Length: 427
Ligand SMILES: O=C(O)C1=C[C@@H](OP(=O)(O)O)[C@@H](O)[C@H](O)C1
Ligand SMILES: C=C(OP(=O)(O)O)C(=O)O
Image 1 (cartoon, rainbow, N blue to C red):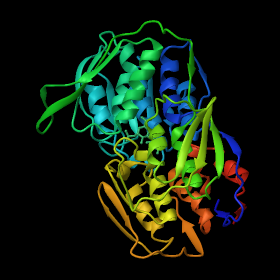
Image 2 (image 1 turned 135 degrees about the horizontal axis):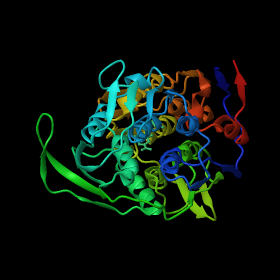
Image 3 (image 1 turned 90 degrees about the vertical axis):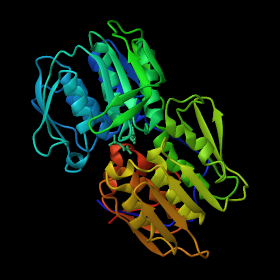
């Protein structure tokens, strides 16, 4: 379904939105719930990705389809590999079959698991024969996706000998790994995350271990209730929305807290120079547009917040602020090649110079340009393409193709847009 987001004349302020639980936190707890049965999860994400994971974990079928959900594919692979006696095929969408998983499969197999490829080497679908895993020591490359490391850590407390995970390469998306360690600790697992100081032989070269994570076996969980904070990645679209408003505009989001496990809570700092002040209130945040001189350029290394790249890029495009976003090396293997997608769609809004490399994007305005009267946002099966560009309906009329992609992480997105007075019509 394609949707038209009409150009907004009178945005409604003082709106309070309740955002669903973090999909990252939820998907970790879902795996742990399947391993340690006596565990309730509050504020579980209603995202398609969490629905998919929840479904496959309960299913008794032998072919399981995880859709577009990267975390669910990676965490699910590790989970089923450790389920003795279970034999399944784990597959996903066409795009999932292009997203690499070889580092995780090699790591699991070196621990004695039996995971093999059904189509292309290094990619889903996978044949998984569950095995009892003893555990021990393992060296894994952390530079491609932190999800592989999280997948191993989530099942590690069920290994008889626990796990000593040595991470080499430049660790990407570090806050997601820290989230995993924190959640394991909440469950009662003895985990130690420290800096590494040794050298290991990888397949092709000698590598320095930068991080070391030790996980001890866990037999009984320390808690029976897990609480998921709402999704900060989803909050990003509202930071962008508020950044586009007049001074004094405000809105609130819940449920959020000051000491989040989610790296995307860095939005609080990232959006300050763009005129969005965050006030922590009971159970949530109030976002206020303040009188603030915009910077000449926004320069950010997003290695720790890869999922915010499109949102920040779109904000800068809307505000006419130059941007240089780096640390984007993981974007090419996400739901789409996000660097290419941003460049293609971004160029349709107004005259600007957009240049990209494999891990960066640069936006430069030579002159102050006006917005084209109607812009088509192709989404390329990527929820974040639709949501990141949506706040630009403050500036021009948008047509969002395949608009329902948003349900991957944020089912209520268009209802919430409606609440701030965005008129949406089906095409
Ligand atoms: O562990 C997680 O929950 C996630 C880790 C990140 O992936 P990478 O580690 O592949 O960058 C992030 O982009 C993804 O949306 C969620
Ligand atoms: C990259 C994302 O998700 P995943 O890798 O879990 O598909 C995302 O939600 O932006």
